[in-house]
Image (cartoon, rainbow, N blue to C red; front, side):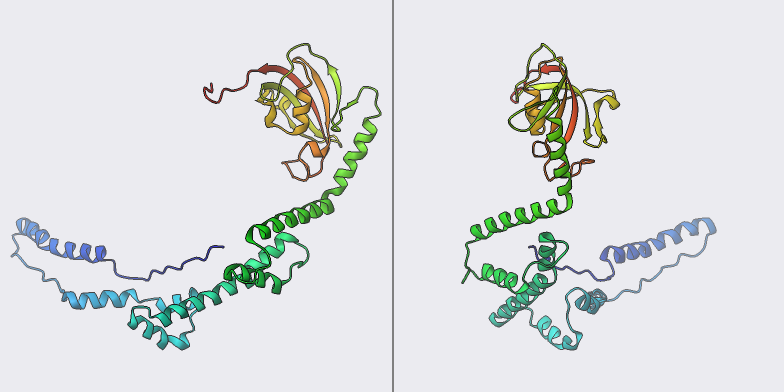
Length: 316
């Protein structure tokens, strides 16, 4: 958590602006002189009304204080009832040991307020956005023990491991609640599809049907391939198609989803297959563009070419 450091700036007369005014005033005699040549008027000298450096410094400091009280109230949360205490601190100028202790105590109050008002509610929403699941008192105590370094019942590494494991659990629970029906529908589709004579099922659960069997090279994971394809959901919704773009796509085999990697590494160049990818070999509980979580995917894949792997030391 990052605690922001407040900075303020008050309305003031810019020294550059003051100098610009003085420069303009000093130029007035020259302007008057040019007019004298035209009108032959007597030369006049404009006297600049200036003050001493001491008076100017005081006026500039006074002008810079404009808006300070509003800043103290709105940005720093200072109660103007205690303005005299603020002025005493301003006149003191340096921190005593007691002041340093008080500054630390005030920082503790501010951080506690942020934990209560911002950190805890945000964490609660991340865990479950429908109900308040976390206990505020235990959250605050854990935070306190972590900062103090005393009485903590877990090491920092152990605490972070528990948090990751539990957050993963809550995420899976949430996604199952929201999108579990997609997973069930996909499983039922694949179960029925596996009974078709033309469909083959691999040990991983991937299914495919050969539309055209090529005779060329079979790619390995590090090779690049050029393919035409169409992807759709089990309800027939097309979510992507290189055919529609009228442009094949090229990629490294091991840079795509697991179902594609497995299928491509069985396809000879020149083949055209229909591939049925279970959700666990596709995007799982992730939403990917038009693809909802836990979606079983169907692809028509046409392997047009197999190309050498990219040499990372000498890329072309």
